[in-house]
Structures are given as C-alpha cells and as structure tokens.
Length: 257
Image 1 (spheres, one colour):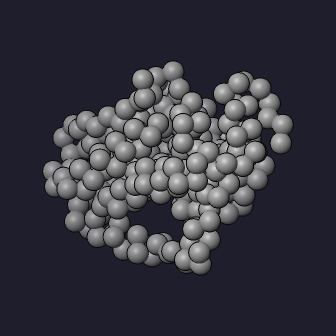
Image 2 (tube, helix red, strand yellow):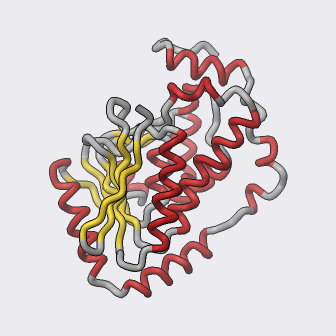
C-alpha cells in the first residue's frame, strides 16, 4: 500500500489527512502527487475558510517512503523529477493555497513532515512530537527548494542542526524556536486544532486570503536558487554514499560512509 492523502470537510473547515499505515504516514511518490491534487482543489473552494493538516494514527509524517527510493533515487534525471515535480509540486500547491492552513502535529514529524508543516500558517503539537530531518544518515542532502522552505520556517540555526548533526528536536524546543504556536498534552491536540479552526472561520475570509497573498510575496525569493546551483543539485544521485545510506537503512544496519 502506497498510502493516501485524504480530504474531508465539515462545515467551513476541511481536513487533509496523511495516511500510510505501518509507516508513520511516510510520503510515497503517489502521496506527493495526491497532495498537489488535493490543494489545487482546495484553492478553488469558496465554501471553506480553514484547512487542518494532520496525520493518521498518532503521527504526523515520518518522512519519505524510503522503500521506494532504490527505484529512482540513483538516477540523476529521475531524482530531479522526484524533487522538482512530485515533492515540490505538492509543497508548492500548499504554499499557493489562500486558505489558512493549521498543522495538527503528533508523534513523528521528520523530513517530509517538517516540510509539509513548514507550508502551514499555524502549527500546534503534542508534547510527544519529535522534529528533524536526519537524512545525513541516508547519504543525501535536502533538495534546494525544500531546504530554503524549511530554513525560512524553522530558522537557520535549527535547520543547520537538523541537516548537519541529524539532530532531533522536542516540541518544546521547536516552540522556543518559534516554529510552533502551542504545545499541548497529546490528548488535547486534536480538540485544540478544531477549536482554533472554528475560531478562524469567524474571521473575515477575504481578509485572510489577502493576508496570505501578501505574506507569500514578502517571503518568496528565488535568489538562492537563481545562480545555477539548482541545476547541479542532483548530481550526487549515483554516488557511493547515496547508495550506501539508503541501502543500509533498508538493510537495517548502520551505514559506513
């Protein structure tokens, strides 16, 4: 099973649920494409005022579905297509959505989960939530657009630790960094998200959309990616350490770099 991105709505509030049973909602390629489809659809909806983004089964998202990686990651063109079309397609659709997005974060929020949460406007988390992007253990870097997004939202200091030290942060630490709006007991997170979403529905909807458009213009910049760096960002596809990192994970052993 490759997982699903589920869309439901109740009144003025929509809920997008990441679902990949047995894998802590890790994102498959199909799920990235579904994420884009779902948010392209939500952008056209005029009957909604807020979207809650959450994961199924007590976790937000544990990252990417590494079991799929040997099928495409070791070819530069396929790797580029994965990040620039599948992954960025989903993230860009979230960023372009004018509805307020509220992330309800529980359990694992790693890699792709941090990226998806970074697209949300308001983020709340349970006390047991854990955040990181420990892909240094897998032998590959974060793609340029994704790194720019994450660094902008978590802060450069935290992003450096996530990517260079493979550091994992607690909810309280992410609250202190400014990434989270609130940290709550795990049993209270869903209810708090629903209460916040309902509060948002009582505010001026057109003003919310205009505010999101303004804020998007303020933070959007392609400067770090405009010097040709992105053109060579996936040349590591067939490298020995890239293969070793992923193969070691799938073999359940420590990598030897």
